[in-house]
Length: 137
Image (tube, rainbow, N blue to C red; front, side, top):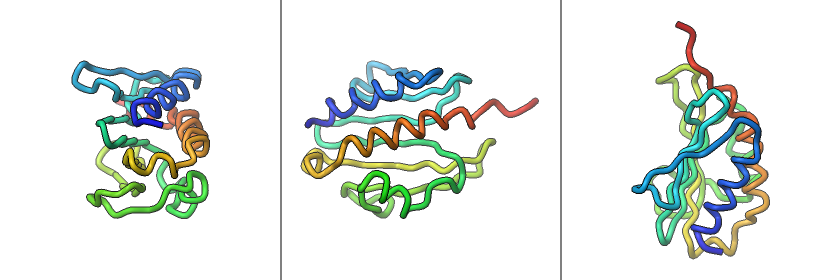
């Protein structure tokens, strides 16, 4: 499987969830931004020839490293490392607060990734994306 193919599968999964959709630009090419039923960004997918980077904003504290590892079978990595894996970035800079799960998969490692498990996890986070709403005025 190629990164472009995986990107297409992810896009299909997200768009299959009621209220979720994706947007893209010429610059992003195979990548896209994910939006929820409130028209709020809750993630993005960036694609290059040798890597796919998936960022999913999730409910704070909902997923531990252990849970993500069990659900996706993708290893934990440190931020900035150039290896296949994921890390969790907690943010409180905007309301609602959220945990950003960043998953990087390099083309050379795609054969070792259980894409069905990854796609199931992405579908679940898509279904939960409605937690991000506009802050009350």
